[in-house]
Length: 307
Image (cartoon, rainbow, N blue to C red):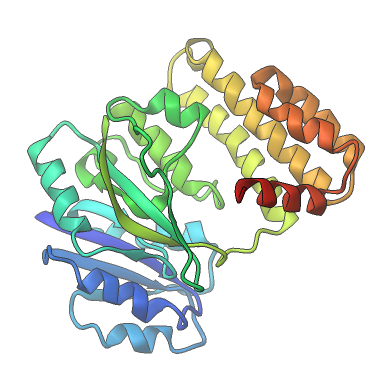
């Protein structure tokens, strides 16, 4: 492990549309001690060719066959050489001082397991909005908060590699759509996080189209996380009963939305009803599912947000 080095992981499958912009944002960093582990997930376009233009700081790792996103990340695990580790999807960006400021915080606070910052949600048409804005975001032991109300965005987090290795933490192949949540929740159990109140990353809105199958994967993986944490933490289900109850509300709401999207309003309401014990906010989808189809509800929510 090289002291001070940042290992940045990028996974790519046919990402020629955005990969140059993403890499340019990395090479614009004011902090120069970094490596890029670029997983070429059997792309058939010019992604790898574009990436090779960026020189020796980029290590291109070609998978033997096309893999799921999480399996491709696992493929790169043994190549990580940096004291610090971060991930950037090829359609997202980081701002020039991200590495410098996050490394400084981690070096000045050796007990920290990770540091995270604000991010900017943006669209290709130029629209932008900060994720956290003026909210007072937490630092310290975030395990309970992340378990019950997960709020991190992958591109904002930089981790200390030694903590990951000490506790054998990395992306797990059991997860796909929520592998980052699984990693960060477990990491937060063992080490504190610090918030850097500055937007130093950008997440491209609209580049992911969620199918109903993918949407149903989230609650299933959240249920898996509860079981994994039960094995990892003694007396977990009793010690964190209130956090689990809130997470189960999220799970039931997600199952409800997936059913509503398929037009199964009765089944959707069964899930929303189960979620009601976790929070009043679930009354809205529960009631609206009696009267409108899901696309109509989505449009209504969009209009209300813009008022």
